[in-house]
Amino acid sequence: MSPVGAMYIGRSKEFEKLKSLLTGEFPRSVVVTGLGGIGKTSFVQMFAHAAADLFPDGVEFLSAPLHEARAAQPIGLPAPIVARFLLVVDDLDRVSWEAQSQLMKQLDEAHFRYPNLRSIVISRVQLARMSSEQIVLGGLDEREFYLLANNVAEEMGASLQLQDLQRLREISQGHPAIVSLALQELRSGRSDAIGEILRHLRGFRANGLVGPDGRPLKGDSERQVIVEVSTANDEILKLLRAEPELVRSLPPRKFEELVGEILAKMGYEITLTPEKRDGGFDIYAARKEGLGQFLYLVECKRYAPTHKVGVEIVRSLHGVLQAERATAGAIVTTSFFTSGAREYQQRIEHQMQLHDYITLQTWIKGFPLTRN
Image (cartoon, rainbow, N blue to C red; front, side, top):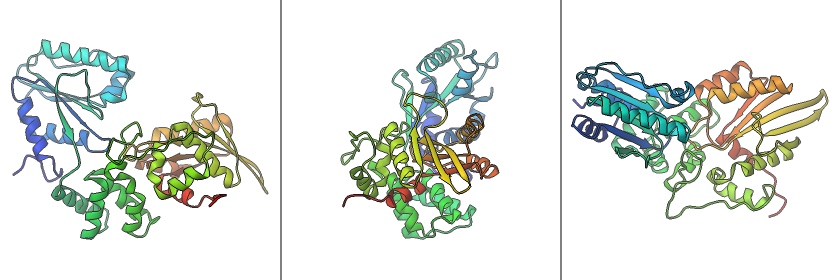
């Protein structure tokens, strides 16, 4: 039986490589990298569970952001490490440069002090400062992708035809997170056909993939949106209608202006907050109606497709609503929302609206152009 258990699909080659690297005298540390949502943390968790007998002194996971929040206290390790111990450092790329340096220094000192210590560092980007071996997780191969897709579909009570699976894999290049996104959209009822969902998700195709910073990955046919105007204009919107995934290439401020202009066409009086302001929202949207005047606060998140907006963003905007005494709030993103974010929003549905990438596409396609 493969060491990759029935609950985890794929990555058998990467599993064997990681096992081989960590059971030798050197290297003592391995970096696992890959796109956001590709399954880095799940892969390492699976490895730690399946290979637990290789680390009789135990396995411990350390969150780099949490370590930074605790003022970078010394790494807690069992003493002494007699046999072999595995330390996993997750989300290293999500902390400041200074915190990375301090944590890596602590890790180097721990390796020097405990020769039987082994470590895995998880990061969305490759770390030039580390001389460790690196394992880059890419998309799943055809067999692994189809098996995962069918399993997820069965859990959600959905079904996928072979041609849908083929199109989904072609668009996503084997990215496992796309399966859940597509099936969640199908189950939500907003899209009633997998073909429609695949059109919405076409931004995941190879040269349309974007990294954690929201920028497109390099490719032979890479397109970029060059914005040299003060507000979103008809030419930009025409381009985005044809290739909506390019909205993720807009600079953050231009994305805010695009959302502002769309809302203005919907009848709202729009005021963008100062570009450098960090007040928890980006746009004031006001409208006078029969019942009175209403003020909405809008937060814009130009995220990579697999970097979902979490509950902490929704909770934060909700707090700002109370401070600003606004009527309601809305979050508009080029990505999607976590289940936690949507559950929180349902508790305050009359005060908060969430608009994801698919809603944004609908807005763009319905935006009235003044010129042909």
